[in-house]
Image 1 (tube, protein in one colour):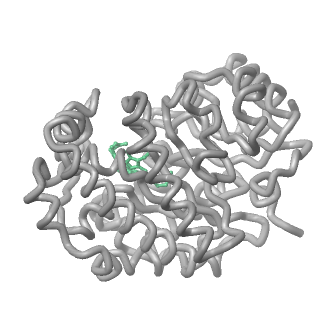
Image 2 (tube, helix red, strand yellow):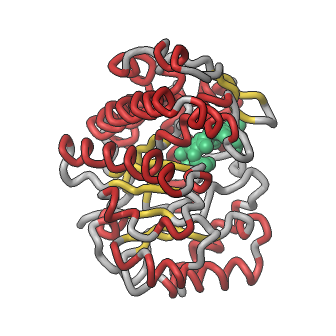
Length: 342
Ligand SMILES: Cc1c2[nH]c(c1CCC(=O)O)Cc1[nH]c(c(CCC(=O)O)c1C)Cc1[nH]c(c(CCC(=O)O)c1C)Cc1[nH]c(c(C)c1CCC(=O)O)C2
């Protein structure tokens, strides 16, 4: 029996959609907080294969999701390319910054990334042996634009201003940075697949700040290049693309990039997506994460509305973005029940 997540990704319309959640292993779970404390800090947890596998499995044991997502972070790739990376508690990531051609030139050769990232591959090998047979294993990476926004600014930014400024000041150097990340991402995701990932997802969390030609050059083309290279090396491995906040640019994104599925954020309606995006294949999404905090009747009705709206084609149920640390785990169980009884 093929795993239900893989069936949806192959284009099958199922009576009940497979379910998983972005950030399903995370601070809203007491067992995650306990394992993170044991590891010491977030990055030590990412680089400890036994403990990273343990936190990946926690939400599977608790909720029986149809997919497990590797526990790691999109910012490990910049670190493997030579950037300094640390996390400030309560604030988020910090990195050394790259603001010109010289900074791009100083990055390590892409082939060197495996040296730093080999524990991540080990986490996947452990998970391949330990997951229930019906649970699919998802690997991931940040998309080049989103990763670049952190590498340029050295932190998360509300409007990605520093990356836009670099792009405007020296488009060739900025393109070289995007190319370098693109090449590293191909090597990283290929290694994840070789270590056991059955699906890979590209997170372009800041795609929504790219407009017109910039969207084509820095969101669409890098995704197309990565997906083409992966399909050549690993035919049959499906790719989920998440160009968050792409709005109208969700239309045709799967066809233009070769993605098997596009993940929808919660700023678009499921009804709109059914007629405009699902016509090209599988879609994933798109419950607003706040329902996992607020719960109640609205959680049930929204989860069921989305499930019904996307029932006519291939669909993977998920949130529109990651579950937040203040979410109530009981609401996750309620959400799953609502989707399965819609
Ligand atoms: C932009 C981005 C990052 N990381 C990621 C993205 C893209 C998706 C998105 O838009 O959310 C992706 C990511 N980060 C994490 C995963 C693991 C898999 C999963 O459960 O989804 C994945 C897929 C773990 C994490 N990554 C992070 C945590 C929290 C760390 C902790 O335990 O303190 C987790 C569980 C930290 C992180 N990592 C990042 C930020 C901005 C932060 C700080 C914000 C926060 O604290 O929630 C960068």
